[in-house]
Length: 223
Image 1 (spheres, helix red, strand yellow):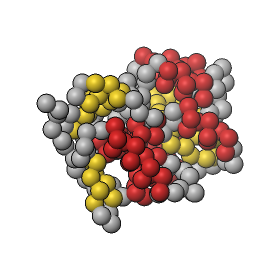
Image 2 (image 1 turned 60 degrees about the vertical axis):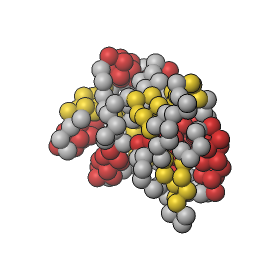
Image 3 (image 1 turned 90 degrees about the vertical axis):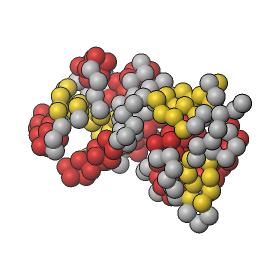
Image 4 (image 1 turned 30 degrees about the horizontal axis):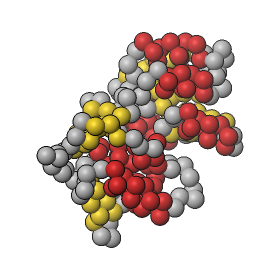
């Protein structure tokens, strides 16, 4: 996999590059926001490790620029420990995960592996389940060729169901996907989002497996 490391502290940057390369990945690095922003625009990375405290452009500005430009690669942000406002702002800006400094390299590698696993079988930008089409690059969903309007949480929920179509996902798994770092997760909210999605998708698209969770099932296109 092709990974970009963005960190302005030379020692930590070198450690990150060495550890990620040792895990079998191709690694590039940037030490300021301008360089990172450029590399993220012109090269295709499978994932990015992005420090928020950068010179020239801060990490949040870089991330917002990438997302506004349609760059959808998974981003793991690095934040100062206890800076909860940075974590919230990073997730709102489009980060996929965060890790507070100081951290153990093993944890960073584990989180990076988790992000890369999401690519898995779905390296293609377009996923299909019956009449439902989901374009991950454009964050767009079509049903029978017609655009479907979803909230960000509905889109994330449908993305996970599409990614693992046919598999039963518990409410806990779905909740962790939507709120990966919220210690006050309420699985009841998943029922609300599933209910909303069911109203927008073809009947029977989301099945309830009693006592276990939900799964996405293929339905027939409308006549």
